[in-house]
Length: 403
Ligand SMILES: Cc1ncc(COP(=O)(O)O)c(C=O)c1O
Image (tube, rainbow, N blue to C red):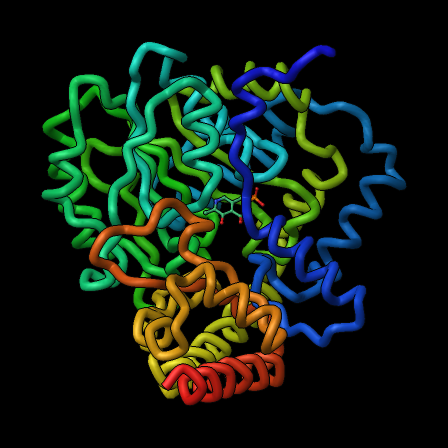
């Protein structure tokens, strides 16, 4: 029998999709599940954006586009990304992709060589695709611990200790999946100070949640002196305009854009032509719906964090962005006799019908940081109230039994 490559056999995944399959299987058996697993807005794409896509189809704009994307979208995205970050970005430096996700692989492929020991530093916990793509591309993953005591930012001194002559790329993600943490301007200045000592390392700034910031202004490392040329800014349409399935991301870098274009030609040819016209409207059209969605996430954040902090054995920091809460459940695990967050998650799903993800779905657990689970709070207020109430009941009942 032919076999699959070692690279494929060992390829990681995004466990949200694995847990979602578990949840769907239970739902098919008639179990009543409240799910907090999936990280996508629970709104319809705004109607003006839908209309732009329909118009594109009717106008016959459904063939291939240049791999870099249509000029109208490159220009709109350049202006959009630049104005949010106080930068002047040229349309030629922007590449449109099938979501922001492909740029993770394109960046690692463009900045590291397979099997040569090239290292990539990335946040842990973090979006699981960073680690799986670093490994699949034949580079060496170097996780950098995020600390609850620092509101899930990492310690710049710790970053410095991870840098070696083999480091090629640093991945940053703010606002952050899964903790909801943000890197403040101060954090970014500290990181930039470290990076100035190491001018040969690229920075990938995953800023897909840039418009979902709840505390102060969004800041990007690319805005700081000397950082723009070496930073790949990654943003997109998925989270801001409820467009996850439309698959539109934009990345910008003045040096690497031509390389990314070649990668797009070698993989997708181009992002969906229809979705590109929709994204032009998303950026240039009215922002009322995007702002209403942001406000709705903010109010749900306050609801879930308030409720979680009343649950026995649970503490939850207030996340500054995205739509994730990352409660510490170390005490709750002890109370119910669960050995770790994964056992807690499975029991919570099977016994109480509440679906969440565990910290191990976002990298290896950080020593000394305890046990965490992730709630994606893109659910109705009712679902949030009922889900957290079920969790509280589950912990109280099992704690009594364990005692
Ligand atoms: C941190 C992070 N980066 C990138 C992505 C990918 O977004 P897109 O839908 O634009 O591919 C996600 C999606 O969940 C994410 O959480």
